Length: 447
Image 1 (cartoon, helix red, strand yellow):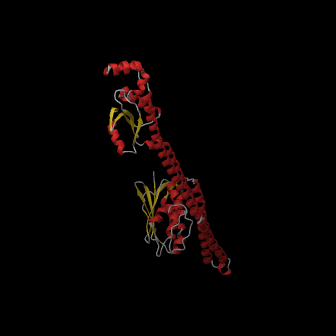
Image 2 (cartoon, one colour):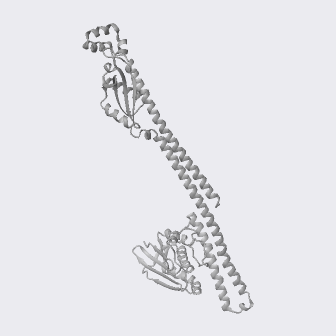
Image 3 (tube, helix red, strand yellow):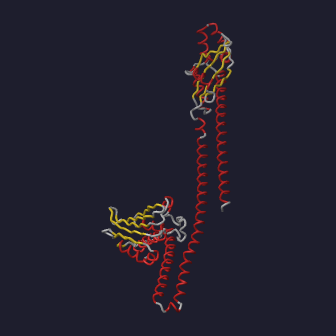
């Protein structure tokens, strides 16, 4: 598992990065193709507009009116030549108005679905001089911009190649198009959005996979620790009970009532320990299923604490614990499950004893607050770090005890305490400093 896990993570990471790289390259190539497509459409539109300007037929009466106003003789010639010849030979700049050319440009722009701000002009070239007899309103500004901003503004030219009758003049049609803001981004928005969405899904799936693997790894370690702890926890009292039973069967002990009481006390205590551990395991299974049923009744907190102290009396005397009880609550009654409430106090007492140091002192106090009844259980044991305090109520978590190797358990007690207290709509908290002991506080409502 230690070797396979990094390999799996590495392979998934490489695959994910490769997919992201391919998607970025694909989108970049698509953006280049969009720009090239935009340029190609501009060329096509310019050619089609220029072709129509040269070949479209303008009514003969319009030519005759324009020509006759300048020269009556040319008007007579127009009658003789006809409109076909005039359309091919007469300058575009004199055949159309700026408004008519604008209508033609708009028509072809819409046909090609070519978006962007456009400006146009018809240029007349005589020698080295270019003039624009027909031009849109902002053509000259667009002309200047297109000279510097070649990425966003394109200009395209079509050689009209018509020569005027009165004055030979080679003409060109100019179309300048400015790319719409975020043109490429908007045109590829669906592709980019889809790629981003599926990339995020892959990343989420990758994170979930790694998280699941880590959790499974942790569960596997917890399972191994649990089996080892359970074996030791049950094996030790069984061995002690076996020795006590053998001792009682000894002929020298059978006639000594004091020794019999001593060994039966040991058997009772070890049996209680074993029962407690089995109960903790069963309660843990119920916690996992969230299937603990609480039977509420009126419970005297002081009586429950004193009953718990009686159960621990032999153990307290054996270790030499100094017990200080300050049960000052004037109203000690709460609605609680008597069995589970007693187990909560027993678990906290057991912890205080297990993690005690030399000259152990345990203080238990109660008092009424505006929120209910407050119970405090304090010891002067080894204490806990901040990190341990943040995890102490997690299931199967066990604090590191340094050189204190006689502390055993499954890491279930405090998880059980938290679940039961919250099931009573109460709160549990801990304050601790390394080497200075711990204070567990419980608060239960009394409404």
